[in-house]
Length: 312
Image 1 (tube, rainbow, N blue to C red):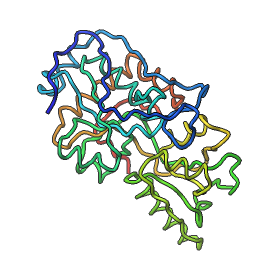
Image 2: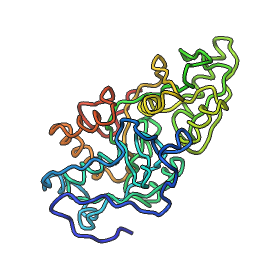
Image 3: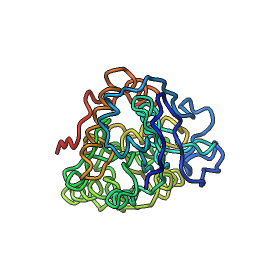
Image 4: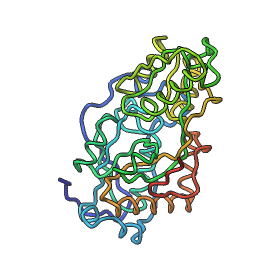
């Protein structure tokens, strides 16, 4: 049940639910969602000040407008989409878009921390209004969800600094231990596709290592338990820039280039369309480009947000 609040006339602060804040020091590195000190990347949420657009606000479902709150699931272990600062605040691309949408619509975000593999069940049960994670838009997912696109994505590979195994192309992954997060496109579709490619090329099979959180995936590569990991290209590029002494992003590998979106329950088409309209307003006023530049992912920009834009 949503907590009742009046809709603010100006931008309001994002509320974070839960008390299990990250207690790791900023220097914790690959095993945590926090970023090392002096990484040169944002460590606080973006502050956006805009007058509320009443026309956009009116597009949202009545119950959300009445409560003034969007309950949004996030897995804060997947930078740069969503992760925690050393103070325990959720930051990242998703948090910045939440700030911008709050400013634009007057609707306050309340974060519900959920592992990625638990989000689909939570959406179906309406335990939250949306999932602010990096959902690859696939035909199968659009049969049970509405996916609102906000960036272009794909799957890339991350290896140890120096690339000791010489992984430069997809077939170089054959016979290697490859890590990915549970429930993701990488752990399912990409891994299966690569297995078929390896078999067709007469190469040894990939040894999948599927673990529950992206921080565990990163740590597996850092410690050498995995030869590489697969994740969204933005997450891979971010980690490579964040800790170049530990990791290297393999930019020559890009699997399944597809749009990425936030997820809304299938029957909530009004909310999905309202979010797409708000993203498009942020594209038009320049806020969208500012957020992508802030996280150094301008190459993932889209020109229009759409609902369920399937490309394959």
